[in-house]
Image 1 (cartoon, chains in turn purple, yellow):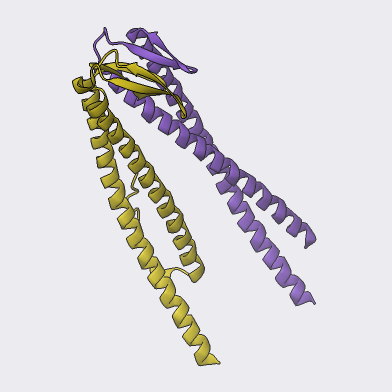
Image 2 (image 1 turned 45 degrees about the horizontal axis):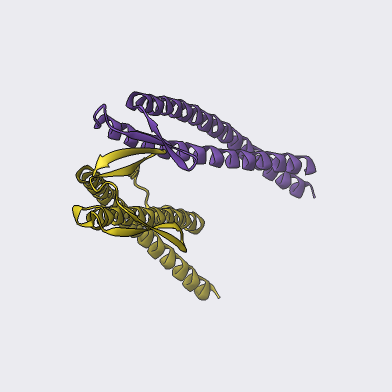
Length: 125
Length: 155
């Protein structure tokens, strides 16, 4: 009886851990998504500019002048990186979800087992 | 962002516990959405302020007039605008673009409009969610009441 209880506790602890992991992953996914939106906005803005437009980049407290091609490349590169990160995090989220689903069924099974055992000891008593 | 109703669930078929869980979830969602709403509002106000600044501060009217430039919140130095035609606009992610005042005005107007559309969408979502919440709360209240009556009847 105590054995099953212990196993149940270990399982639920693991489940909780997975849930926090899931939360963290979802949060970083949301952060990436907002970054993607912001970069998309900048990309759109750059697309509507003349080639001769003056573009500055904020480096620390100063504005440094930058070539348009350079700036466009920087934003494109960033977007690509973010897309990849989003894919990575999405996959992570799916993995953790699968894991926690499997764990949940296991917990339920352990619970029913514990109940059956409890019933049996009652009958025996 | 709105999730379409995947399936209809009869609220009456849920247990009181499940109902309060649904209520909590809706509460959380609603809080999150109202927060976003306020943030959008604040952003919109900021852009409007930029528009106002361009209109009053960087127009040809201001040409030649002396201004006080804040170096810190309590220290100002006199100065004058070198260029009343151009401004440098923050377009996000650390990039700034030099624009003519008319272009900058257009830029900010577009931003305000975009946010307006977002706010409208968000508002309808919030309304829908609060309706859902109200329904769940109603069912929950009836449930508690009838449970109380049943308990009184058996007593």
